[in-house]
Structure formats: structure tokens, C-alpha cells
Length: 263
Image 1 (cartoon, rainbow, N blue to C red):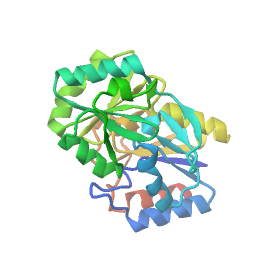
Image 2: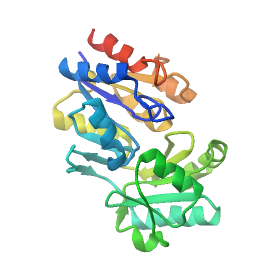
Image 3: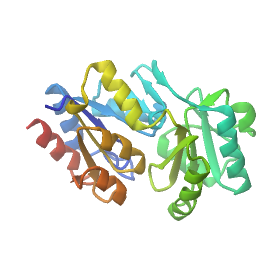
Image 4: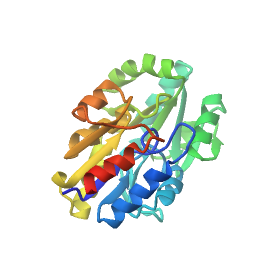
């Protein structure tokens, strides 16, 4: 029996236009009423995730910042695995040298060195104010939950292999949406955060399901007892789900999954 359903937000429940299907919202609430915890597991920062979790009517802690943090709905910190400053600055210098937009976070603020179009697009998508700080080295603090390289999808796909190879064994690198390369501590991904939260809640792996659309969702899809990919996800994500797919946002794919899981 499934007692916890981990669900990504962007590209799984949220459309590219930031719309929620009312059928999916109703399904999430129906699952909760049936005793199935629905847990948002998102790359979004906490301030960018909370409004959507509220609209969905979810009551469980949020796995946010790509698994770097687990937060209560009132903002309380349950788990925090940030990227150390020196490692973060290594990424920042690489991006400076290659004219790539990179951003970091401090105290839930989105911080950048330059006000670029990529920064404005992310700010709008995340629903977060943009803070131009001039120098991330001085502004970032001891850790940052994650770094994000934002670029056009073809640029992301071109740089992803090099970024992964460069920080292999030091940082975790994956795409979330096609425009974002997400970089976190090796201790921080959605699987590790979900596994930690399940242990805290007394939920066994055999009682879990997970659904997502991005490469950053692959670890939790592989770990959950029942993993599902969103139609159109990268091939490796679909493979991690054993070929099980649900419909894209706006097609009630999540609602049908909930129906299958709880009847």
C-alpha cells in the first residue's frame, strides 16, 4: 500500500505557463484525505515552492532546492546540505570564464552578479525577486543550497556533459527544466532528501511512489517502490521508471495516477 507519493512541481504538475490542472489539485487533496501523504519534491527554492504547495493543499514538509533542504510549511529547517563556499566559487569562476549565467541563494534570496535576461526569466518563473549583488564571493555566505546555470536549452545540453565531468565526485549536477542546470552538494538530491524524510515520518520504501519529468527526478524515481516519469521526459528518466509514464501537466495525468494508486 502506498503511504507517500513524492511529486515534482514544474513539468509534472505545473505547465510551462505556470498553470495547475484543477483535476490534479483535487486528486492531491483526495490522496491526502485517503491517508496518502503527497510530498512536493522540487528544485524550486522554498519561497518559490510554498505558494504552489499551498494551492495544492499539501500538509507535509517540502523537499526543495533540489533536495538540499527539507522545510516545514512555516519555513522551519529540517535538513540542510548546502554547497560549500569554495566549491560554489569554483562553479562561479567557470561560468564567468565561459559567459554563462549562474545564480546562487542566501537566506532564501536569489542572488546574481549581473542582471541578465536569463536571470529575469528565472525570477519570473520562480516568483522571486532578483538581487544583484555584484560579487557572489562576498555575498554568498558559507554555503548556498544550490547553484543554477540558466541558458537556452541547446546551450544547456551542450554544456551539461562538461559540467558533469568537471565536478564528477565533488558536486551533483542534473537538469530540471530544459533551461536549467542544477548543481548541489553530493549529499543533496531528491532521492536522499526523500529517503531522509520517509525515515523521519516512519514510511518504508515499499510504501512510496514518485513521479517527475526531469533528470533531477531520476534518483527519487529509481528509489521509490513505484516510480513514474512524465510523458516526454528524457529517455534515462523514463527508463528509471521502468517505462511507466503519466500524462503531461494539463492532461490530468497526475489525477489518473492518484486514482490508480488509491482507487
